Structure formats: C-alpha cells, structure tokens
Image (cartoon, rainbow, N blue to C red; front, side, top):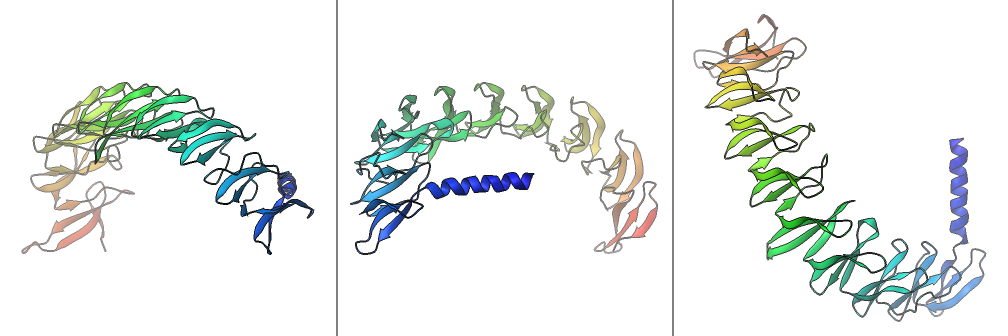
Length: 370
C-alpha cells in the first residue's frame, strides 16, 4: 500500500514538473526562450537568461536587469530590477536602484523598494535595514518593529534577537516578540536559547535566567549558572562559592561550598559531593549534610551503593550513610562496577611503582590488574 502511494505521488510530481515549460537557447544569437513540454515555442528567444520555474514563475534577465514571467511566458513584472527574483512564500524580494522591496504574485509592488537590505525572518516577516538601523516588516510592508536596532536576527519561532552596539567591539542584546514588542530591553551581553521555558542571560559579567515574558526569574547576579538539565535545579557560583538554585530562583543548596559536584557527577540529583573548609562531604538537594565534611577527597558518585573516600592520606570506601565499608589503606581507588573495583598501593621502598588489583565489597583481593 505504502509503495503504491509513493509511486502515485512520484507520478503526480513528474506530471506537474513536466507541465512547466523549459528554457532553451538559440545558438545563433545566444538568447533564451521557452518551449512547452511538447516542444512548442512559447516565448521566442529574447532574454539573456531564464531560470527554471519555481512555484509557477521563472526569473528572466535582459540587459543586466531582471523580471518575472509565468508559465504562459507573460511578464508579470517589467524587466527592470537589479537582481534575481525568487518567491519566499506569497511575496518576493526585489531590488531597484540599490533599494529593496516586495512584490506579490501578480507582480504588484506591495512594498516599494526603499530599504537598503532585506532578509527573510521567521513567521513570514522580513528584517529590513533603513539607513543604518534594522526593523521588522510583514509581507504587506507594515512595520512590526521600529527601525532602531543595529541588527536583528532569528532567535526562535517566537522571538527575534535585537542588537545595539555600545562600541566597535561590543554589543548588547534583547528579544523582540512576534508582535514587534520588546520582550526584554536591549541590555544583555548574551542570551542563550530557551530551554524548558527559561533562557540564560548575561549582564555586567553576571548570569541569570529569564522567562518568555522577559521576567528575570533567576536574578542576574551569579558568576555562572549551569543549564537546568534535570528540569529542576542548576549549579551556580557566586563570590567563588558554589551551590544549587531551582527554577524559581530559590537557592536550594546554599552557595557556601568551595566546590560541589555538577549534575552529571551527582547521584541522580539527590546527593552531591561538596567541599567545605578544605574537606569533602555530601549534601542532599535540600542542602542538608548527609555525610560529614571530614574527607580529603571523594569519587563523587555512589556506584553500587558505595564511593571512594580519602582519609588521613589513604583511600577506602564508604556507603551513602558515611559508614566505612572497606578500610582506608589504599593509595588510589576507582569506582565499583559489577561487584569489583580497581585499587592500587605504592610499592616500597622507593614508592615509584604501583601494585594494582581488584577487590570485592568485602575488601578481598579477587584478581590482579593487567
């Protein structure tokens, strides 16, 4: 059934494609004309160039000027424009005397060429430049966003990114919505794409998050703040201290730690390794201490219910309550996988080589490491 439908679609496509006339060149005068699919001459060779048809129209060139013809060969515009013409949707950009405007499919200039530059924007709009400033117009030429920006660019389906230069090498950014209104002032040094309805912004070297309304949901005060990959909270840094902030801006883990594990190295977002006053321990997402800050180092993640920890310059293993599972007697350890972990001891007397082997969760040696 699917094969039959596909074949039918291809046949229909080929049928309509075949109905478009084909450009051909008279080799005697190098001019181009049109022939029907049956070979009949529709337009005698008179143009310097004819493009293939798209959406029922072809662009023609004569004496360095351009216009449009339809499938009957009729000129729907005078051959007077300065560049190739191609429809984006229901309108096409045209250029005349160095200025750009729009025509519809009847050839009528719905927007007389008056802009210095135009480019296609999302939602059927166009970015347009007048003198030195950019604005936003619709396909009828109606001004949607006023001409006051140094640049406008695509952001996502709901917003356009606005830019104002503060000097030759620096710009500030904001967001313009589909109605042309400023969702945010042009005041940010950077704006990241929206993720789960929040976008990270940067101002005065600080970071925070805004909502689609432009409201600063998370104050723009942090030295850095990470993406909300879990959808619930993100690691943040302020005054060289770390903690976690949730999606409404509450600091769920206070920013008091010298270091704290990121979401990737957390334990499913529930328990985080953190460093306080030079010692490591673990806190939960409410900021409560679950394992005391007494260790010189930890492996961050609890694999198979245990993690490595360093105490008095030796490594061992603890469980998620902080209970010692395997004594602190190793010089290096790795996480447990499939019931075993690789551990190492420095070999005396020079302590320049390693004895490496695997242990189980009772600390028994079960095999040597290669």
